[in-house]
Length: 321
Ligand SMILES: Cc1ncc(COP(=O)(O)O)c(C=O)c1O
Image (tube, rainbow, N blue to C red; front, side, top):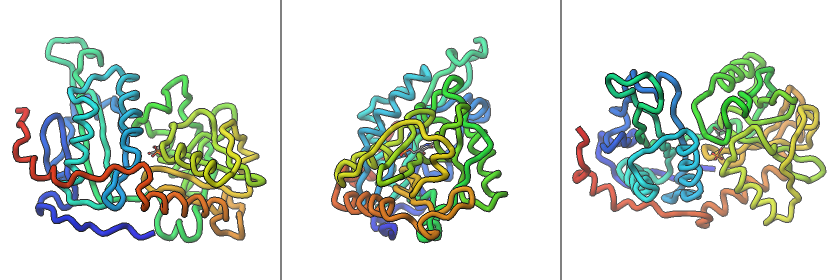
């Protein structure tokens, strides 16, 4: 899977990416969040990431709908409408001249207005977005040999504490588990909930396959847009799928395992806690799903073509200062 080349010329300052913060467009290297803002000091932020592949956004409307639901869940009110956010994202990809991109939209809380108590309700929220060259959770080597996963001893933050369907930067558990995985010689971790069921990993959802039935967790994880796509592909291939609890034992003994996310698509695994699956190689059903995912993407599945002509409009953007 070769990343399509960047073919649109960008202004030199936008070559490493483009950003938008609270009304202003800028090169991504200039984009910064003030240290006193809640988005930085308290991780008081929600975000979403949509992929662009070969000049097309994938499921942009689904990402915007999930982003808006997360914004509402955190009692935030950015100035921009959904239609305006969509136009900003198109413009960022156009400015950076990217055919394939990692496009992030964030809504974060600022600082309390002077004289008001330090309550989040007293802070305005605003938008920060950026588009940078495509990046993947799995390296080329991991795609070739399959990901090596481990079930971490670190438990996922319980949904009763923070709703995992609100995409967030509370990555303390995920980050800690990544160090545990590294020490164990694995590429990535998968976290359990307090009932011992599989949830998700740092930046991806997980599936396991047993007797050709494709299964993913019902709760404790982000409702991934790639996960939703995989379930649609299962229907298309006539594969039975189930969304239900998965114990650590069932996961460890699966025939196949794969992870999935916007930044990587379907990523087959070949090891779980040191156990080798499929002769230490990506499994056949996972590989079929991965290949169908990318061939459909290339054919324009859920695609919105990037409006590259919007790059020219940035000069007329209002300066918020
Ligand atoms: C914790 C977590 N779970 C799952 C996912 C996968 O979601 P999606 O397929 O919508 O990218 C992500 C993506 O970043 C994530 O951060």
